[in-house]
Structure formats: C-alpha cells, structure tokens
Image (cartoon, rainbow, N blue to C red; front, side, top):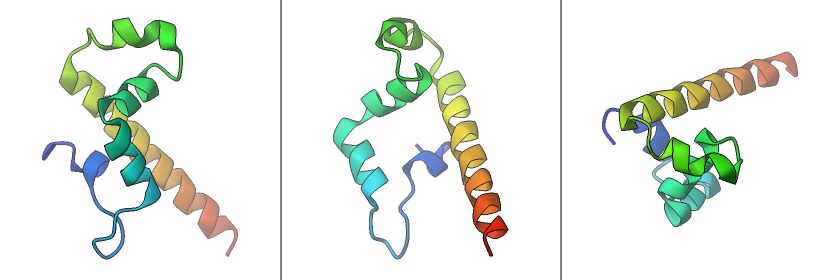
Amino acid sequence: MQSYDQLYSESGQGQLDGATNFTRKYGWYNSIYALAKGDITRFENITKLNIHKCLYYLTFEKEKQEIEQRLIKKGFK
C-alpha cells in the first residue's frame, strides 16, 4: 500500500470521502473491476496478472483522471 499510496489515501482533513468508503466496502473487487473496464468476462485474466503491473496501471489512471479534472476545473474559472 505504501508504494501505491495514491490509491489508498484519505481526502480532506482526515475525513474519508465517499469514493474511499466505496473502495473500503468492495476492497480488491473495485480494483479488478477497474482493470477489467467493467467486463466481468475479463476478471479471471486480470487476477492472473502481476500485482505490481496492475497497481502501476491503476495509479497511472488515477493520476491521469486527477490532472484531467484539474484542467477542466481550471477551464471553468
């Protein structure tokens, strides 16, 4: 978890946000779902991949989304 802290960090002033609570509730299922792009027929193949490859991809996706969201917000100011 330390190597991929962006996936497990708290938001705000120590308060967990709804997305974090969702992740806690569904645990690894949420990560497998994201890697499989929601296609349940891909779950078995995803679970056979190297864990670091999976976590690196998820970290990349999260950071990419955060940058895109900041750019969108900046465009509305």
